[in-house]
Image (cartoon, rainbow, N blue to C red; front, side, top):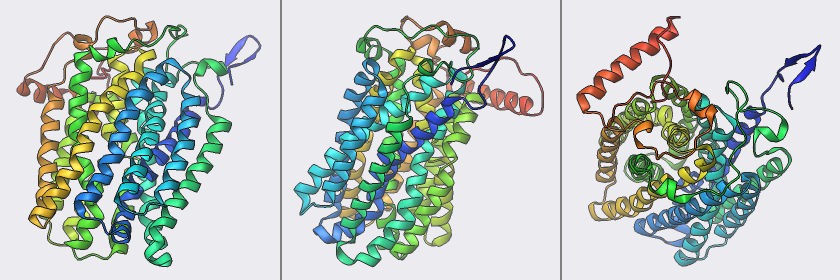
Length: 470
C-alpha cells in the first residue's frame, strides 16, 4: 500500500487507504447507531404493543441502551488507546449480533431492558474506536471530513430502518418486531466479515502516512494512555457538556418521532416510516458537508449553526399541525442530523494528543450519554402526563439553544489543552489558533462573520491566509 518507486521518484498510490478505513467506519456506525439505536425507533410501535409497554417503559428501554452505551464509552475509550482498535471493534460487533438477537426473544419489560442495555454496551464498544480512526488516518485539518463520512452510517441506518422495517411489521403480523431485530442481527454479522478482511489499525502498518499530512509524522507514542490527561482537560469538559445538549435534544426527537406522527399527527406507520427514510437519505451526506465546513470556518461556529438549526427543527415539529410542518422539520433535521458527532469526533483530536484521541472521545461521549440517558424518560413521562409529545419537543428545542450558546463560548484548544506531548505533525497542522481565551458573545458573532467571509473568499479563489480548525 506504500508508494511505488519508479526511476527513483516516489509515486503515491492512486487511493489512500484512509478512504477504505472511513468507508468501514461508515459501516461500523451503521451497525452501532443506524441499526442498534435507530432501528428501535421504527420497531418501537410494534414492540410496545407486543409486550404491552407504557410510553414511560419504552423510554426506559432507550435509557437502558444509553446507560450501556455510556459505560462502554468509558471502557472502550481507554482500551482503544492502549490496544489496537481493530481487535476491539471485531469483538464488539460480535457482541452486537448477540444483543440484537436476544432483543428479539424478549418476553416482557425486564428482559427487554436487559437486552437493550447489553446492546448499548456493544454499540458503544463499536462506535468509540471506530470514530477515533480518522484521528489516526487523517491530518488535523482533514479530520472533520473523515469523521463526517463515517457518521453518514447513521443516515443509511435511518433509510434502511424507515423503508424496510414497516414492511416486515406489516407482513409478519404481531410478531414482526421480533423478525426485524433478527434481520438487523444478520446484517451486523455480514459487516463483521468485512471488518475481519479489510480493517487496519494505522497507516504505518501498510507503509502510508495520515491523509493530508505534510512530511513524515513521528511514530505514535508507545506508552500507555494517561486517563488523567483527559480527565483534567477543562476544554474536554466543556466540549462534553455541549455534546450532552445534543444527546438530550436529538434523542427525544429520534425516539418518539414515529410514535408522535402516528398518535398525534394522524399519519399511518408507513407514512411515518417514509418520513423517517427521507431523514435518513438527507442525513447521509450531512456529516460530510458540515464536517468539511467546520474544517473551513471553525468548529465553534459550525457547532453553533447546527445547534440553532436543530432548535428550529424541534420547535417546528412540536408546533406543526399538518404534513407540511412535519416535512419541513424532517428535512431540516436530515440536512444537519450527524454533523455534531462528526465535528466532535474531529475536535477531540485538537484537544488531546493523537494516542489519547479514543480516550478523549470516550470521555466526552460519557457526558453526552448522560444527556441521552435522561432525555427519553423525561420526554416519555411528560407525554404520559400531558397526553401529548409537543411539550417534550419544545423542551428539546430549548436545550438545543443552550448548546448553540455554549458552542459560541468554546475556548481555543491552545488555551485549554494541558501541556502533554503532541506530535510535531499535529503542531504543524494546527494553524491560527490565536491566544484568546473564552470569547464574549458579541465578539464571537463578529468573528463568525469574518470566518464565513474568509471562507467565501477562498471559495472564489482568494487567499485568506492559514486556516484555523477553530
